[in-house]
Image (tube, rainbow, N blue to C red; front, side, top):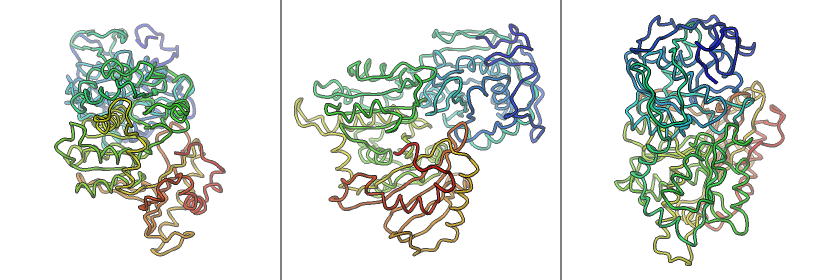
Length: 603
């Protein structure tokens, strides 16, 4: 459906339309706050007529680490999206926007098609000279980062709500990545929010909708839209990172089988071109690989609960050797072996420990990093390798500074995010290719029909060398926000009063705090990043609220316990962690505060 103002009556509200009087529901009430003054002019691209569309500020457009996320119905109503995009252009330095090049793409979810046209027209209206847009509006988040970097763009728009469901009644989101391909810093996101409270004019180019289904260039005066292959730049980069011949020697073996589940999300557009067309994998190795606007009614979060189809396949008697899944926008991953699950914390540590088989890391590792809730398996790899290991708040932007400073090579989060400094986003396909590289390297001298080295064997050998960090995460999704916040405040009070030597069941406290991070590069301080109780035996539990959903609150409880004794490393994680889980739940009073008896997801 076109969003061109010249074709629509102002009094009619349609999906994605700019309206002269935006009709936003009471839950997104307008506000009169005015911390930022509107700039009255923007550069005009020659040959493009720009119409000033009146609008009114809309409350609640606070932009966070993952951009702005709301229900799709809110974004598609009136000027909701337009206000945010215009505010972004106001927040960016005008001299950088004028005549600039930008990138646009997303995960294929509902409303992306209409949103693409709105963003293109506002870009032209605000002085952008060229837009690179993924065909059909497709660009996985890691691919968008790669395109921004490869094409020298000022930045790019990523239309995604990540691992959250899609559809008219589900989630939608948008974020802006800067010229290094990394999410916009807080300085910019705070500026965006300031302008959303005062924006009163949308600079809308009066151009027709662009056909995004066909690769090629469309020009309107000096403004140009180039529709590009969404896979090409990413694949070119991947070939410089990995030894594709080595990987191909594994996936084409007669005795090797794999399954990649795209969960009807954006990596479906990448799976077949990379794994099948280039690496030669069996076409049946890719499943659910056609992106759908509603992800076929599924929840595109690659974990043991929502990737149920893949889990059943990998835990069957005749399971493939290797399994993997990725999420809505392609930046997360889950790794499985034959009847074996690799935790994200173990996965990043194993990749780092075996990095020498990946050409990109032949010269060695600069440093390693993990988010604070992620198990400390990576720390032990860093110590043995003699490199720095950073503990950061949750959020990929904290890794970007370290990468840009040349102090970080590989990093990861327990929330199924893994990546390296080849781009500035976490990268699901990268993690899959890294694991295939490790398997290929370990099996290169094993004859077909021989006893192959498995995912399970690689993982258990890693534990034998470094010890095992038993880890589990409990997610309580869709909770009422107020009681969750009260629970976290209760934990903060407990942590502040706690003393070294206090006993929590059989666990002796080392320290408790509300994690605070000072960026070693720019000195920026991030506080209140999660309440943690750490014990003298290396065990710990952590509570934090997640900000990646579009509504309500998600409580995340993280449990970790270290085991150096190889004879005890084979115990099921839930059994090993049961006593500490009991202590954590009793300490937090989670059930009392939230009313939840059981988690939504256990990882």
